Image (cartoon, rainbow, N blue to C red; front, side, top):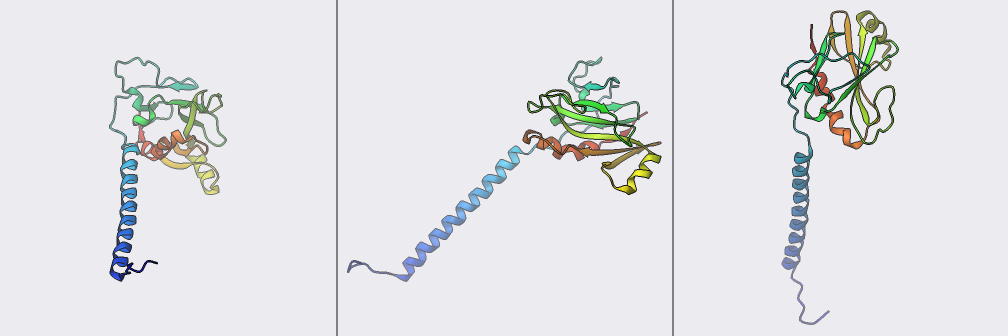
Length: 197
């Protein structure tokens, strides 16, 4: 310690205050930076306004990115199931989706809604090659639903009824990080459920 060095308590307090303010400023900048990043990387609420309805083909796989017998390029936004009389509407996240059907125990049938994905290169019973299963809609008779609902088994979440049918959805349990936004959007899609004739 040098002889001419003076320790002033107010100088020490001033330095401590400056350090605290610097740390606080850095934390605040970090929080604001994260909020800006999050706002720019969170998908905007998809447009769920009704679009023209197109009857789907009844093949095992229904691909909405193929040409339809209509001039409206936005027809993929509305899925119509004429067999069971319901529709769902999709936002921009779902462009290019496919629908694949499969028989499920207890249900009349199950429709798997899948999105293009480079991570799923193998075809399965629920998705084509290069498609990833996002969620499924199972169709039950009202009587069958009444039988299985109290059991609480893996039957999905009921989201609609039409005449003698009950509709339940379930999300896939294994998805890639690129599909997180679509998984977050499932509830918006099923909220568009409508009965069609």
